[in-house]
Amino acid sequence: MSAVLEPQQISPLIDAIDRRLIVATQGGLPLDPQPYHRLAERLELPVAEVMTRLRRLQGDGVIRRIGAVPNHYRLGYRGNGMSVWDVPDAAVRELGQRIGALPFVSHCYHRPRHLPHWPYNLFAMVHGHDRAEVMMQVSRIAEQLGSAVRDHDVLFSTRILKKTGMRLVTE
Image (cartoon, rainbow, N blue to C red; front, side, top):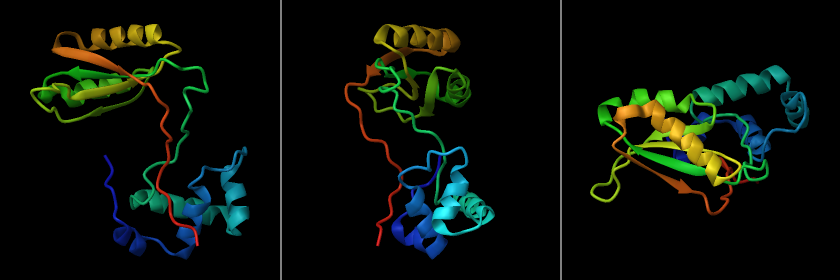
């Protein structure tokens, strides 16, 4: 899990070039076979400097990750659901790693319980073309978890929320 940095914590970690790099990438990398080359051209920097700065910013925790953010709905996955599981706290880490490795689970994480109303401590997002496909995948998770499962549920998506990362104010 990465830390959330307050603005006053970020400023000392980045210089003016880092800021330009973040602003240039916060809407996404260029759609190009060599996106870092296009970024370097746009910023008038050597590609090696762009790569070095991005690695350092990731290492410092300013940039949490660089990755694709698919729009599952546009790809035809309309039965998306968050499966929630009540498993023993002592086993949640090992079980979460096992479930997170399944090809149909996009992300899996541990959350605190909120008893007596919310007993679930393991969350696994499942994407399917419809709810029936999601429920089949949830059954496969249940098989993987076996007797460790005390209870579970599926919270189906009803709206598409905009996914964005950190945004810096442009000057």
